[in-house]
Length: 205
Image 1 (cartoon, helix red, strand yellow):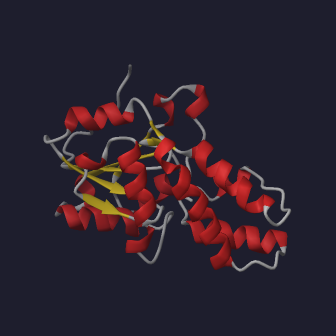
Image 2: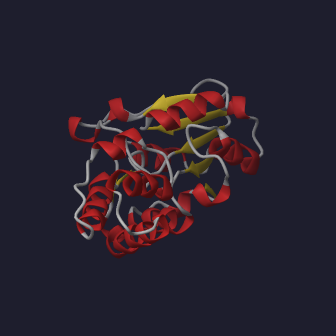
């Protein structure tokens, strides 16, 4: 198994969650399909790839505008979250990034920077057995501007007490990679470390 490397001079690591540590794409697809079926809208999986890294309400806003349904954005979000919370425990960890975290645990500062909400992030981390490795978790609930803006990762750096230039971000989504670069951080695209099945952009919806 080939693992990523920590860049020279890096003092802290920041990990995206969905698609980087957690194999959650199938679960998100399943939940959005169920939501959209409730008002006879054909869900397009490409939405997940186009908006990866964005919070759930951004996906709901897109679906609302494209479907012209009578359901409000807030109601769409609640439906999606309800479905997701009911099945989140079945989500599996992504190798080799979770192994990489375990190897470096206690040796370097680490945090989570996700576009998902706080409850969703906590549930996923528990499901994949990784909650104990992260004291700092920054979610969509903690910042105003989400990926591709750098706020999520800058907040992680602030809470860890490390300057952005000494942080390395691990991401699978282009919006997240862009956010890390805007933050002035080193970035590792984790997709080459996965099998072909897992090399598509992850989601944070």
